[in-house]
Image (cartoon, rainbow, N blue to C red; front, side, top):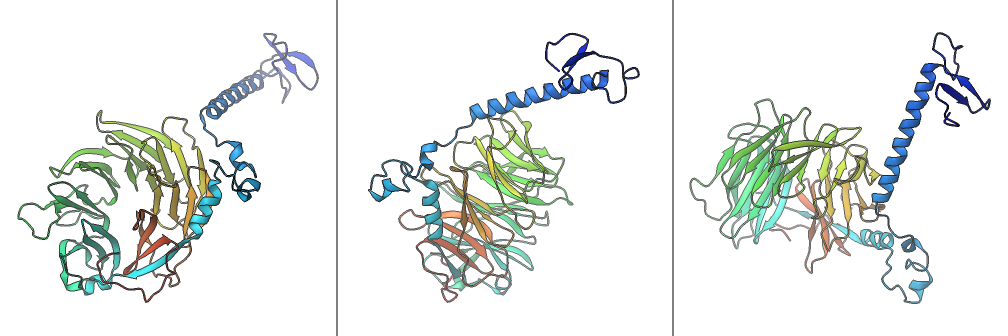
Length: 435
């Protein structure tokens, strides 16, 4: 059509000749030189040029791994490795596959502090400043306990707070003067759905505060802590940002669709899912912007690493990595199906981390991926004794020596994967004091 480009004429590539552009009611039916068909082809050609320019710009901005790392010799998996000449070239895919294959599960039974917790499920287990913290969801709602110093019996568990609704998040903030406990629940039932209180062996009156955010028909979905200052909470009606020191709500960002997860990009910016959209909220300007659009509702969102530039976003079918500085299409992604409205997802992307992502799949197995290489790594070994409930609070931790380990809560105990650890054994039991 562009050949010669004579105004008022259409060039037919098949017939190799020009035709005068005619009005629709004059030109024969399905004639290529009718005015409507000419305009359609012009729009199509323009759209193709825009897509080509966008693709070229995206290709220029994308950093790709060197092809030499995949070479059988210089990549370190062939003759070079046999001769001990690996140098600086390391095949990350082989390294990750070996590391994941050596992560062995061990199940630890946690003795429940009372009958209600015994028939419930362990929601969170952590050690803070040498003190064990246990959180349970049960028929009566939920409760959080801490261990008394120098006592390892279940009777030594001290209740910190109790709710009439299931927990969605438990956070501890360690400061020089005081350790603070922040707990959030799904429903706004009395005495509230957010608790901010002291975390000590001896309680002081007036230190504990219950807050209620959202309307009576709303539900909270997820929570995220920004250092020692702010708590962000997503819900069915809005995203709330609270000042922890004063225990007051400072921002309420309405959402058109429910927000199932959120994360802090940096100290000032919250990224959250809003139905199928990913939105950012800046606390400095109180401004909101929609950055990415997906095909399915967002079930998990996290910011891997400490750069504050990337977002890992998931739905029921995929996990994708986005760069907030670039186009609205993901850098790459993985096919991943899971159960429920929220995905259990955790990353090990610190400066010394491996870039591994662990996510619970539809079969209650843990799949691993590497966002530094864009490769699927594989499935973790299953515990020998299969749990009854879904795993929760999946997260990377460290064991003695700084080696990475993966931990999850299930039923009334913990499942922990450690490098070269002992095989899972139902008889491996301990009291509430965590390893």
